[in-house]
Image (cartoon, rainbow, N blue to C red):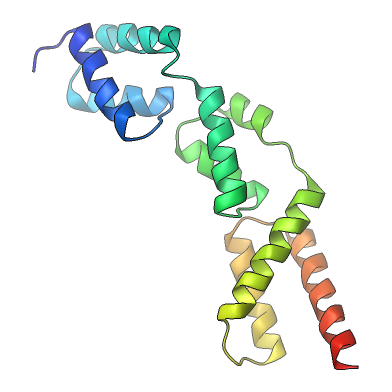
Length: 159
């Protein structure tokens, strides 16, 4: 492969054809392919100007994916965006903490997880739910509130 800006653009289009990528992801992939920094910068500049490369738009898409599809908590959503090469300033601008939304997502996850749980003791269920929600990136206070609400609802149902 020749090392030219046109070849770098062509390869970048191939990569973007598979999925949206951040500038960092594209830069890393082009470097790995052996393109020079000058040609990479020129290709990325062209892609930005043409509207094919937009980290802010990618961050919004990934936010939707993290919150609605994966039901990740705020912490894991930040980590997810960061792993995709979105710059920290864009992550902080895109992801604002919303306690009410976190509570709604955590309730959905709890009900989803309870459907797949076998017949564990209440303590074991609570521990498994706690661990699951921590791995999903929810903070301890939100988890504690959600689990105490769940226990309260279960106690009311028993009465």
